[in-house]
Amino acid sequence: MIPQEIRNKRVLLSSLNWGYGHLSRCISIVSILIQNKNTVFFAGREADFITLRQYFSEEITYIPNEPYPFTFRGGRFRKRDFVKSLIPLLNCYKREVKSVPLLVDEFNIDLVLSDHRYGFRSEKCPSIFITHQCTLPLKKMAWPIQWLHQSFIRKFSEVWIMDDQEKRFAGKLSESLGKRATYIGIHSRFNATSYAPKEIKKEIECVLLISGPLEFSLALITHFEKEFNEMKGPKYIIGSKEIIPMLPAHLSEYFKPNNNWKETDELLIKTKVIMSYCGYSTIMDIEFLQCEAKLIPTKGQLEQMYLAEKLTANKKALINDQGF
Image (cartoon, rainbow, N blue to C red; front, side):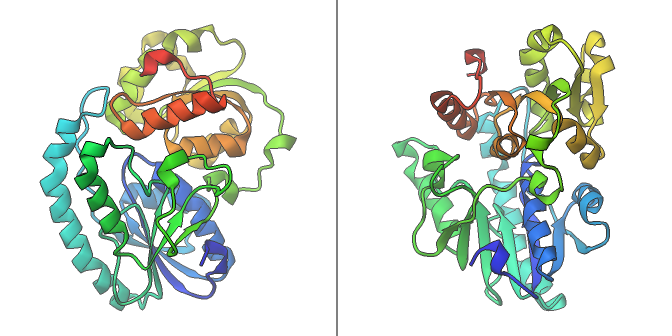
């Protein structure tokens, strides 16, 4: 089964709250579901609902759902911060495993879709896990974590691998988990728009796109500050309003808040160069936008470090070694 094959179903969907990349890529999935006459129920945060309404108006039924309790500090991903979150995460997982079957009953759901939320599933109907990380970028000595990750995934009826089976943008991360796993191609929120990148003139020289958890924003701004200053022509810094105190005074004039994603889309579609972290959703967006990218990995985040190395090898982006 692939997204395009689902028709006339009542579908319950939720995405991981690690930044907004998972929500962003789900916009493409939701668009396909709605086009195929499915009734969509989205479980998430109020901030998610505000964003989705910009694309789908009131076509979705919104259900409040507890976010995973991640802890971020400073300008890098720290293993000890993640370890401190393990017990709260496990408790959240247990509550989710119990709450989703109740939602399935309450809303008469036919299919559950989980974008990398391990507990968002039900045995009362088919449940599909959406991911680009079937395999975590861990060393062999970390096999217990790898085993736990894949055992959680195998509790789902099927797995949708968000990658192109031939081009493999996620590389070894998206190695198939077997017969129940299906590659569904790359997905970007720009797939849900009427934009045709090749037909639009690139009028904006550069956008510094502040992506990922807020706590990592200052490191991204600091890394690209000099290079951004040297860029000529129209340029912008796009991110949440919370980053304003982090911006040096001389950069404030370039700031545009991304509280309206559709307005942000109109800028990005016209941009020649995007500077950002190399999150997988950002990589998929850039592939759709067909623009130049200057991406760095979040320090300490193994997935992004692997993707950065892969991009460098494939000459898909300009990666500054200082980001490692």
